Length: 201
Length: 352
Image 1 (tube, rainbow over the protein chains, first blue to last red):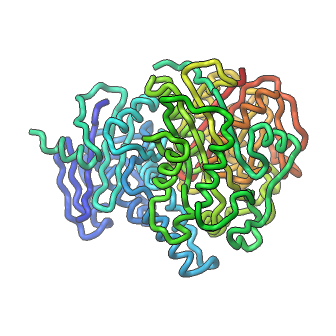
Image 2: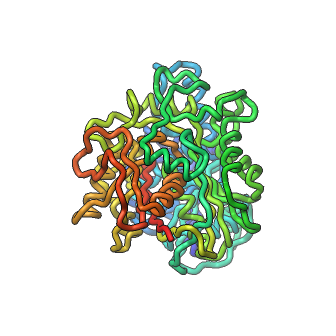
Image 3: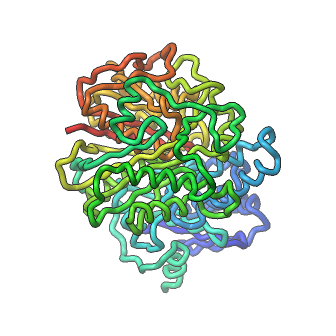
């Protein structure tokens, strides 16, 4: 499995990439980040017309996926899948919808908040933005990179954006399972993998 | 990678219509429906496919009762070395309703690992395509030799959380769902659970032959109404060999059924196979529906019978659905799942 690109977004709205050593931000907000990142030379084709529709997790995920794609040097990802792995799932979105419903009642219930209560929604929103028409799903396994590598080896050969979303960071690797790659260190999270690979000379 | 079939060694299904695959199949063939107002929350008159046996106090949770009921209904033993693939959409959402701020999917996986005595399970969540996506992943892991046996479970409960959410989206039927009907007006939610024991070693009672998934990448809640991407996964799994029947996702919403019929119309331009949706009987069981479709679909294939389409009054154009049960020419079934985010899943199974 070859790592074609990777991006990390931190809680301070800063972004770094692995291969091109991109370093962007910190940004005042995600709209400012969107304007700068979508203006990068060689940025992949994307449609962020509905950027404001999703919640913060969706926006963080979409921008980080865009940068992981940029880091790979590719422009189009129609065949790629978008996967979610471990992280915090959609707990914050579940609580937001439920508290809104309990506070405001049924008549004022907001369907838009309900839509976000699936852990695949950030993956699917990123897929829509980048035009990725491969599989999309969220998996929770033991915290081991080996478990993720096994999942990827089982899936149909192709390119997959592999995402890990937490309150502190969003980390996305673009893995190409059709190509051989170097052995990866055994770590428990994608953010830890990013840090290990970033530190290599 | 070997593309050999994966053997189905055992199936289980617990729904409001029965606690065995046979009882559920008999009920579906008789056209039974299970819709009633829930007793565990105020649905404001909405009917749901609820299982009264799951009613009770806060402890254990409704999801725990459902998974325990499924474990008690397995009817087969779980071999050593079995890997668990657990599918759900919202998991233990009843605990969140009670005020516990937890990851309901993670808690679902923890519960399933405890109840089925299998550590290090894999949670699979792909909206309403979760069940088939889990079965597809298990099939691939077996083919790769990552495990010898796989227990695939799918489960979701009827909840105020999900009911009010779909109500806010305007997706619920005002009466009871009518999949593939000309005048369908929305979905009816349900609850249930199902299990498949898969193995690389046969023989079993059936086979999973092929699976494929993709994403429309078009709209977050609406399917691509051309059905183009759904048709693509159908073609990939069929590989030119038409099925004896199609178990569709068939939620009864205007858009879902329209997209499915558009997809099937392009795949089967020379004649649509008989089509059926469980949801007219059981409601939409969310993460369970895919596993239920495969477990019950295998029983339909073995009996060479397809149930009547519950809720049907006038078929929508292009849909080969019937108010009567029909015999099947082949014990080969195409099963479809569709989910929020434009997710599409197709699986082919065969009886042996």
